[in-house]
Length: 331
Image (cartoon, rainbow, N blue to C red; front, side, top):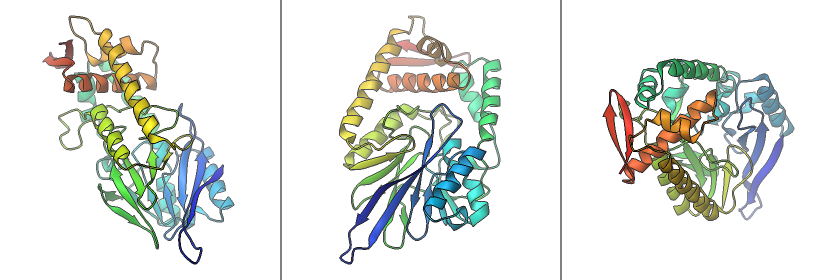
């Protein structure tokens, strides 16, 4: 499905400066369809690509055709973050069109052909996840990689970089949290934000468990970083935020406060479940999300550990390393 989301006429002669079209692409994941945005400017640019499935390929080709384009016409693919539902088809687009693929430097390793789970195994083990469960999680991640073609070459982006068009530009705003390299793209002239999974209308993004991109011996402080990212977006006074799933967010201030209230509510619930003897991330996840199974068990551990680490940073909990595992205690 294609939906024209935004078009501005800002020049005296009536030329359209930037046309933005949303192409809704199906995914096999619980989150549902993903939004791919076509920037109908020179050079012709896609923001995200969808997963590597036959259904997604057909939807993307059909969506482009309705707008008068083919995959071969695409000149750039800007990847918001390194999850398969967002970058999975980027390799196919690059192969068919010769387009350049762009991604934030912190997420670039996750889309490369090489996969090394050593650091991920360690942080899962430190969270108290049993070895057999870690093995199942790794197998599940390999399955997810089947929905994304690895990229042999990417152009890396950093905070503040500008993505230039013939008459316009989008500014990169690094918004770590959902992944270390998650980024938003901002059209500064009217404060429109391509927010991808950093801001979703009807879903609270999951802060993913990841090694720190600067020092992989440490765990990335995903929730704390995410809240800082939300505050930074708020400081931009955005008018419209176009998410990676679902509809637009048009009142970010209300959305911002709702997310903070949700975070505090989740913190309170988690703290109430911690016994006096302390708890690992794995045990806390079983208490907080007792019904989670399959891939959702990894998401449950990710969110729980993120909240535990945030509680430590806020002086609500202490943490000690015991037999190679982090154990959290109520202060």
